[in-house]
Length: 138
Image (cartoon, rainbow, N blue to C red; front, side):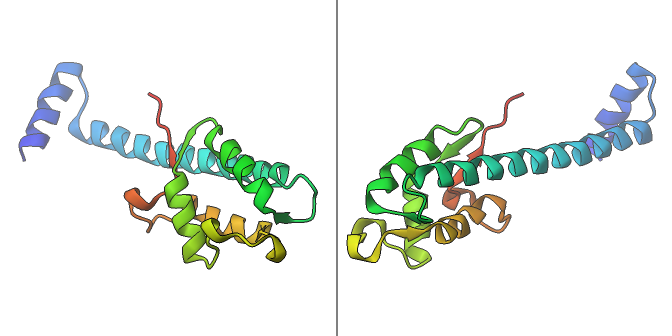
């Protein structure tokens, strides 16, 4: 009620009705959500490109010698913060332990790494567990 009263006071000063102001806020939220989804889609495309670039021998496996380059590239993607710690945890959870890569096993399949990157799109992942956090610039 207090917020509505303040909104009503503001709208009177600006010559708008509270209903119009509330509608504008709702529209802004919808637009903001669409923009965020669009940004996420662009970031996912960048991530996939980065993963394929890290696969230097083009065998669709991120080999042990390619993992550090992948992490460096993931760190340098504009618009997101990359948590290497959460990336490693997600790999372990998916059955891939980055501390125990066996050259004989050939590293990680690109598909496995892409599955881990789904973390970005999963709304159920707690903020503290996010591998990627979208930087919000206002």
